[in-house]
Image (tube, rainbow, N blue to C red; front, side, top):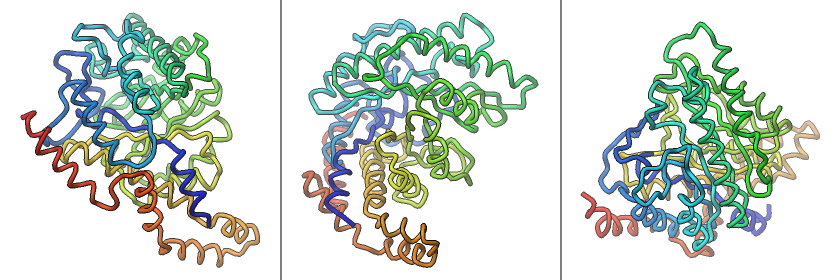
Length: 400
């Protein structure tokens, strides 16, 4: 094993850190946002960000405690409209320019998401597959606008943006016609992606889901639908760790889908019995996910993003815990003696393979992680927690 090589790769691999952990997916584009689309943030821990300035300050504090150089993952509902109401199909780069400049000043990359929820035209649970062409057209225009914004952000930062499309469209109970909504979704996606956008500055991804609140029986954008769509249209496929059956291995899917799509976007999350978006742990499921990326040599064609929101604990701590755990899982994968493991497997020596895998689990991984934190000048171990507590006392407490 080459610890220096592992540390270099870890330092060069950004995690796309999601803005919506800081304000419970509220966003700022509507005066009184109501979370929809089957999404639910549980808990009422004090100190939620109420403005763009507060959200940025909270993210800066979190980033100061996370080693490495990372990316901001932003939803369109976090547009900086200067207090004006701007409909989502009328959004332009000017409404995200301040976010991109904020990223530029901090050396961050930028990823983007159209927001197909928490809006009156999504209240009945359908957007791009809506039977009403006027509603469908609104959401298509929103998707087109977001791709333009993302490509311009990528151009200005000199780093490609990954733009991810997820829609909540689904039925609570079993539908009679499963085909028509998927026909409409396919046509809507084709319309959104029709305009050429430089692949140098933007990569399009599509995200599936199995079930959720109010979506127990039928989801239009299922895994099979989006796998077929991404493979046939040359789009990236997003695999969200919480969007499959609890007993499915998302790790097992990576080597299967990577041969048919240009790249994979991972939404690293933790579902507990359902897509509940708990804070990422250094657990078996997350380790398996990153192990598969490393073992299959897919790191160059994989974007790693986070997707969880927990309002029951300090939100900044949630960012720090989740991001550092995703990095720990990646480091553990990079430290595997992959050459010896492959040789044993290719020789049919499954005894050696198992023995080596088990011995690896007790090697001094923690010492390498601590060294990474020291080199990146961030707190080692749980020392970061006191900084979060201090910020809570001096900043969050004043928010009421």
